[in-house]
Image (cartoon, rainbow, N blue to C red; front, side, top):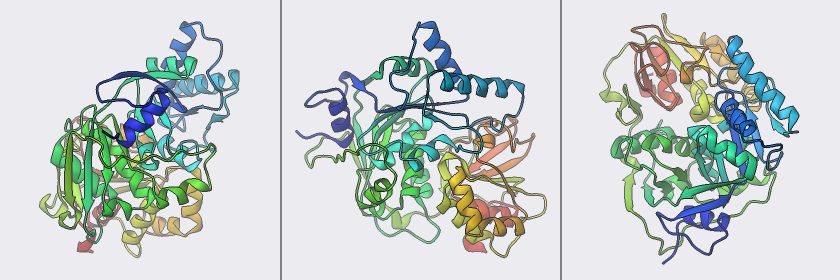
Length: 419
């Protein structure tokens, strides 16, 4: 019996010939990361353990991105803890404001995660890096502290669900729509502690930006990881930026899966997940004419250059509706510069949208776009739980950048096809 791509990567890092689902293993970690919310806890546990140095100062990244630029004294203290620790241990990859980005957009862009890696991060959306063919998953801050000391971690090998996407995408349908639709089909526990392996000709046609979006939201279905086997799209993306040698794996033809779920993408329309769950996905034309107060286009899910281009395509020559705030948040400094050089900022400003420096900000209800009671937002972020973006009596609707931009213009939830 063969192995899946996730099992192969874990076996190699456990120094074993093979592993099977349910097996407890200890693996070598290629790269680890934490942010300004989770790293301070890990640093505290690191010091309590009496550790004197990290396992490898070139295999750990600290990325303050959640409450930055510092919104208050407490967030400034959190970021200072990271800064001081990075200097103390000579960490090569500490990303300060002005040089930083949202962690899960920044690390692939910088070539710090590569195919075949085992990556752990004290943030649930670490699963994003499965888009380049890595086994990547979120862990708690205490587990991360142990990784910071030893460079190793234990896992229970997950079983795998294989999703096979075939057919031709409809206009305005993106990777965000595919993953929202998928979560809508299986639910927020549909892949609990299992690997989600995304395959099929439709996935093969997706750009890396859209693949990163799909892998990013695997956690919203409860998955241990999401992963896409590397192909030429991966190699083109990785070759010019990888800081370590990549290792390319793919699933064996006779690999065993818990389930194989075929999905005909030609039947999928642009999706919106209504409150208060990512699983509440439905076609945008079935949501109704719901008025909104804010639109957020950004985050580790949809703040990449293709996302901004798509939003600009919809906003070009149009204006945000009166009474609606439209926030554009490029995910990294490089994306910010590229968007500016391509003239996207001119489009956004003429549409009367606001442009922010890279930050997670409103995604977690941190700052830069908090909702008041009774307000509704359409966001390209990954979660719409109660109170996620502000007051518990506010509402968040998840969508692609195209639907979010169209909604900003319409002043209500709507499709770009309406424009």
